[in-house]
Length: 113
Length: 111
Image 1 (cartoon, chains in turn red, brown):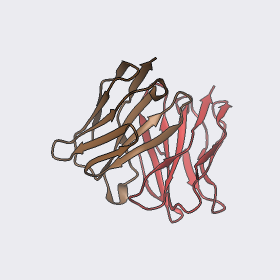
Image 2 (spheres, each protein chain N blue to C red):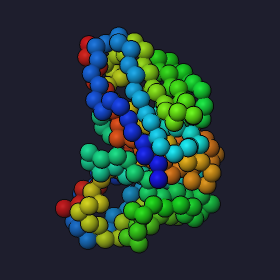
Image 3 (spheres, each protein chain N blue to C red):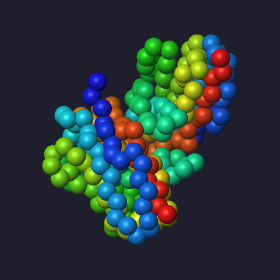
Image 4 (cartoon, each protein chain N blue to C red):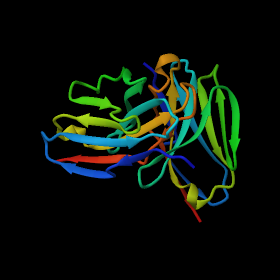
């Protein structure tokens, strides 16, 4: 069964460092998303991406964050200069159609020290 | 802004019991997702509902659009059902993926 894969599963970084989280969505999917879950809190929407551009972003997704699909398969989330409060589980998700079922990855746990 | 609330927050059951988890939302939506988060943290999509009822194995999800309420039922619960169950509301249109999530219900099923 096709699945969304994310790497790394866990990354530890120092405050101020750049981090790139990678996602490989299901191959024929067209809509891509990043969500995050701070420990003990609700999952939150970060950004949606379609047709090689951001279609919507939340207020969390400030200038420190960026997304891209550099090679038609990977979908990456970059945090330019990490802060302690960026420590969270980051989930990638994809769907084939705008109203279709969402498929989530296993998540990437980011720890900022 | 949509507010999504789940109840109960914690649920403990004995194997074989019928489980119900409730989800209420404050603003009209296009679809309601039920998700399962297993102990390792990964999320699996269980259902996506726009109206009525869906069934998959021992899981049943219902939604009442007028009352802005959805329920997830598990029949004949089993210890492997132990997980966090999350509902998430989708506003639809171009914001379809901009989900608003509930806080999750921690389900523990004892043998």
